[in-house]
Image 1 (cartoon, rainbow, N blue to C red):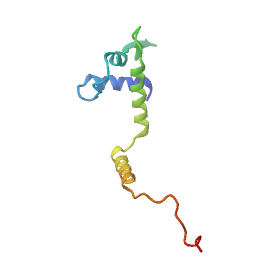
Image 2 (cartoon, one colour):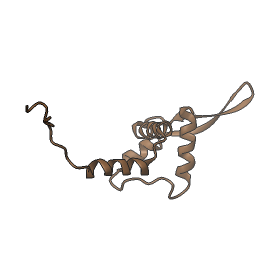
Image 3 (cartoon, rainbow, N blue to C red):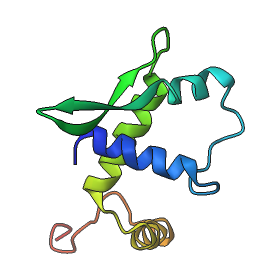
Image 4 (cartoon, rainbow, N blue to C red):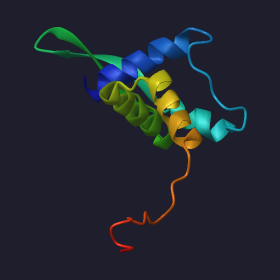
Length: 107
């Protein structure tokens, strides 16, 4: 999926309340950057092609970061519950000594 496809998915999610949660620590500038592009319809060879264009004067780092995060999340396909269980098993595993002495070496 391309960048425009991810942006379209993000806009669809943002349009529905509760699908995307944000930290309350994010300021107005961050949300301004998130909304730094708008979807427009351009015509190529007589066919409508939806695309995104930057709103002049706005920075887009927040939007780019969210798009990259969605792209990586789509690539990884991580099973987060399984990963959490794996990490818990590592944390609860007994700590082994740094050096394991062999009885054969002590002869």
